[in-house]
Length: 362
Image (tube, rainbow, N blue to C red; front, side):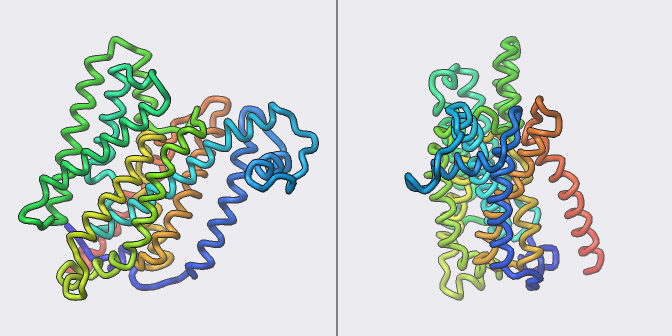
């Protein structure tokens, strides 16, 4: 079921694009795309006005002159649209890095963050927050419930898959799929008990389909510490993942504490995934598409792959969110629907490539 990250399906060892050039291009796209995303909406705004408002809030006082600005303009740009764009950056980067880590741990190009039950656990936490009425008590309740559910799900999977201090990657994968299925069934059962409450059922449906509508700065500040911690852990263990990609026995022979690396990386991926689901709902396929595509361009080294995937994931989700907001304006499509429309065909393409490679090996 597993295969080495040095395989052709994972980009081989070739580096067709300079990692530094790639990252610079992604940062430029983020800057331009962020301004465009903030400018677009039910009330289109001039991009120069948007740059001026963002500069007033992000740069020291006196650096940007406040000419021709109204309180309404400032409210729309900074309090309504800017938090959504910032969450696009954070969630896209988080899911992409978590996907890269999962593909390294399982040495499988088809791995993604939801495989170990974190997404299902976060979904159950959110469903319970809705059905118990806790989500209506305060804004932080829903994200905290979802994040707690995702983290508890991972700890359960890890406990079930660990035997004698050793955690088999294949057993971890199978346990994650099983626990995820059970938690998904529990979520469906809880929802079915509350079908009479149409408004609540609709809220749950919209949340599970993913979206960043009505997000505020409070959501950014709630997710930021966990995402920052997860990204830092990913960066610190990038070299260990490069060694681990050669096989656990080889990594152990080279002095890597394999079990520690797997545990810390899984916790980091859970922080990234749980925080993302908590503020954006279920946004699928980002962790599959982006790291795989980046690996094809930059090669399998996680020292390059982790930061490049973070930037590319932010760009990808910003694009998806822009499409969700504008394709049927003033109505808005769910963000998870847009990412799934990209991810489904891409997943089929990966399966096709893999079957071709397996036939060639025979």
